[in-house]
Image (cartoon, rainbow, N blue to C red; front, side, top):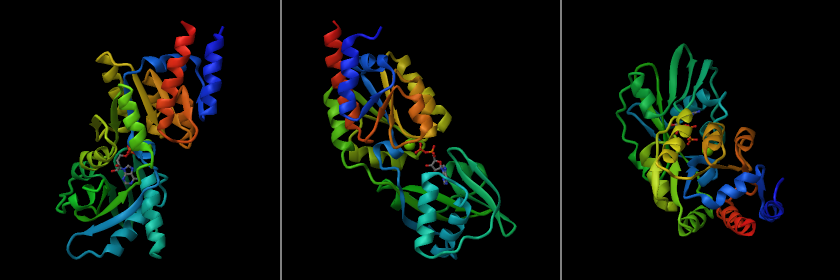
Length: 289
Ligand code: ADP
Ligand code: MG
């Protein structure tokens, strides 16, 4: 049977907007020494916007955006929504596309006017034989994610998309570190953009360019070092890592799959909930003993 003190702890947590689905998650929370935080939608708001467009010579900014948005029209990725909102605000009409495909952790591709176009990260386009001749540093140094647009042969431009950091992420991360946690940020985004965000919020370690299916492996590797690991995430691609972690914290505004894979849900979406849960857990465990 569930000890009385666990019930009290679960009730206390609920007052803080922390929903504990698995009683043992509350008890394990007092043993954690490492917190892995997803970047997009967990540390940041998850509502990115276009911050800039770079073009190769002979290309127009509006044409690059129009193609990018036309490629993203069938995608539900937060990056896609940012590109589509920007095209809409500039009154750019979307072009007809066919044979759309979204490739997890890479980008999107479709055929427009008989030509196949791709919009996604640099590594993927280079794998497809595209030479990336534009420098994206002016976008990435502020933490924006560069989306590279190419036709079948050449790079056409880069769309920079950036997300706001949640107002209390920095304070919540400082609190976790004061509580003795090693705080790790994990993301599918590139190293340069990830480092810019990491520097603003003050994490101990950054693991970038992780394919969606490899996030759980990274959590497992930390556990292999003897760490007791919490994973905090919001997305479909975080679900296996949330399940793998010793305690999974889902952001309540995130996807259902993430919530179902985690022992604990943070209703407000603030990372303070992780530190609160750990404090309540410590008090609960003291009462059990
Ligand atoms: P995260 O871990 O930050 O949630 P994802 O694994 O979803 O990121 O995506 C990793 C990278 O793959 C993105 O930063 C982007 O470069 C590329 N990507 C994924 N989906 C899209 C898309 N719909 N349009 C453009 N690029 C995409
Ligand atoms: Mg996310």
